[in-house]
Length: 144
Image (tube, rainbow, N blue to C red; front, side, top):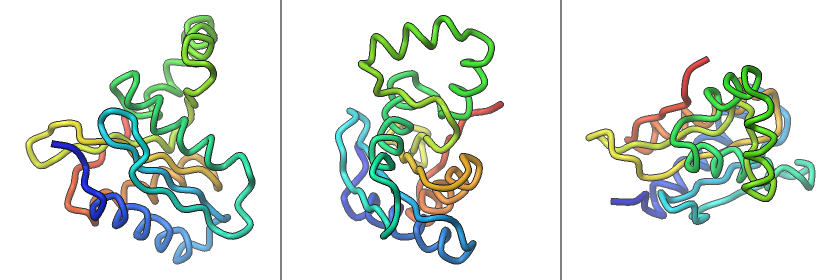
């Protein structure tokens, strides 16, 4: 099973609503299926032009490594040389900051990932989790 377009759109819309309700900076939200393909994306007005690449990279990196970008960030500080090589191997597509959240179904199966960029990484992640849970799925942001 993979994430549906309806679920992905719910994630994006709820994440953006959470951002507006929390008075955050303009966000970009990307939802990818389990194969790393873009399913849904929105960029709020006044969000920077790099926000898509960062949001996509957070989600793509989480999928590629098999854990949320919170774990990627923690591991990057401990093994910087490995992450330099990982960035090279992925043509720079992996972003190792919190805000890339794996998406699992009720059985725990991986169905996709959400990446958000625009505010602090913790706030980006908070919005992604809210969207994923609103879609009836389980958020897996990783651990510190």
